[in-house]
Image (spheres, rainbow, N blue to C red):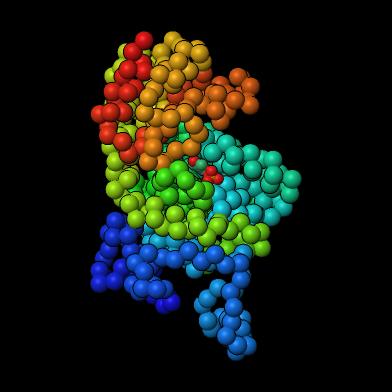
Amino acid sequence: MSNKPPYIADGCPDPKLSTLAVHAGEDRLKPGYAITDAIFCAATYTFPDSQAVLDFAEKKLAREEYGRYGNPTEKVAEQKLAALEGGQAAVLYSSGMAAVGGLLLAKLRAGDEIVLFDECYHRTRQFCKQELGKFGIITHQAPACDYDRMEAAINRNTKLLVSESPTNPHLSVVDLARFAELGRKHGVETIIDATLATPYNVRPLEYGIDYVVHSCTKYLAGHNDLLAGVVIGSEEKLAAVRDLRGILGMINAPHNFYLLLRGLKTFELRIRRHNENGQALAEFLASHPRVERVFYPGLPTHRDHEIARRTMRGFGGLLTFQVKDADWRRTADVVDRVRIPRIGPSLGGVESIIEQPSLMSYHNYTEAQRNAMGIHDNMIRVSCGIENPEDLVADLAQALDV
Ligand SMILES: *Cc1c(COP(=O)(O)O)cnc(C)c1O
């Protein structure tokens, strides 16, 4: 197979996002002349003779050797993801958390410090404090989007600034230019987990962010049927990250590369509908008498609406709202009356999903801890799928109408 540049879809000098989603990273002619990429169920790859072994060892021959280091379909998916994000290279992992963990482990050593915005994914915060803490890495947290507090936490040992944007479940939106500038000013690298945004809605590398992370489990694969994660950045910065993944074996399964590629073909179409549904449902909920507050960056009432408007092409399919004068039980009643979204964790798939964060992801925290994190008993999070927006609005309307 050729090693042509991943950005170029054949015959198209300046491919746009949907063209890249369909074609980037793929050879025009594939094994068996199939239009789809093959699934290679191989733990090992063989050589025709010893000269080929030598050529591979001396990096004269780009190919696979052993399944822990790579897979041909994986390379296609990595190149497609890098092209969508506008990055040089991508490293795929078995899950979003494997990507976060793999990146941080590759970049940090004992004595290093990192600063996180406190609305980062709760497992990311837990990994940093509990697991990296065991190896003498110190984690500081600053309130989300409080750039002064983040800057105050930086010292000469600081190696990384980490945030999600938008955050979950509050949908805070980071001013990426300011975040990247903070890193540059102090000689510290920056990581943005842009899972909720996707490269359709925001392109962090264009603002000078060093690493973009996605849980591909969500919008990128998009069908609630696999786990995957990716880190995207420059070839040079990702070399050590890829090496460590090969040592730890956090590689995905052959079938998942195929499913991810299949999901990515419709990436742009899906995200447009997710954006449309998110905006429609957020506007409906904001005007409903039983709704106390809606968190959605596409609403003018959201704290970060101005930044979102400047930096995002759409505002995504995820929204959170609070039910007026409701305890956890009355809030659960609303969730239980909903007919289209299913009850469950996760987000970003074609099927809408609804959940009450205080019962689902945050149940093992005390009420005081939950309140400190802004997770209230009357909160409901909806991941809008790609169903019809009027149907989703009507469904939530009947669920609230008690
Ligand atoms: C789901 C999620 C993760 C973790 O990804 P997995 O694929 O579940 O391991 C990380 N960050 C964000 C923002 C997520 O939503």
